[in-house]
Length: 233
View 1 (cartoon, rainbow, N blue to C red):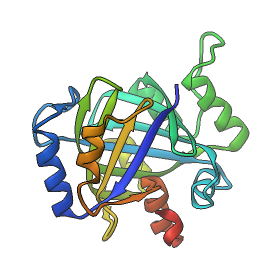
View 2: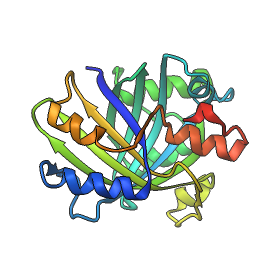
View 3: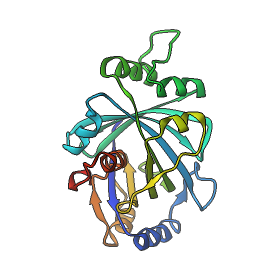
View 4: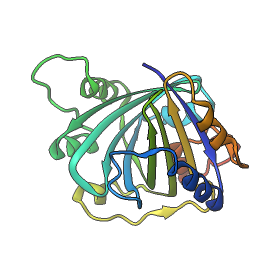
């Protein structure tokens, strides 16, 4: 099922004020162990044409992204994800993989399967074979998340966006040096199934936040390649 995903860029003060309002009416996401939030690290893949990057830059209506994701520098839980986007709606496929499987993907290798199955790994393997998919960027940021069960609403506050292209250090478990983005490093994402409850919409709109098509991968990779302009936002 495709979900709506609205994104907003904001200042540090606007994010603080929104967090104050949200935590008084919504529950903290169960993935968040404390009020300080948690850290997300994603390794993004692209093909030899940088199709994922250019699709985002050009505003292609239907596109997808491939990534590996870990939380709080912990390799005990590793997620392989494919995120499909159609206009402002998203659909994410996610599957747990092992550390050895992750290392194989980071080397640009397919993961062997014991049986034919249409799952995230199989789709990733096809992309590696057909498009020469390989890891190109590591994107990291800090997240605080709130949920409202009716409507399956999830609101995330992401800050301190940073990136690296040192895949080898990531594979070896070393803490790579990240480059911090000087601007556009705070973003609020609002995800829901069909309708956003009115009181939540009122909280979100009560400020000067700017709605955007903000892509963390696009912005970080664009910064590295010198493509950064208004199309990244």
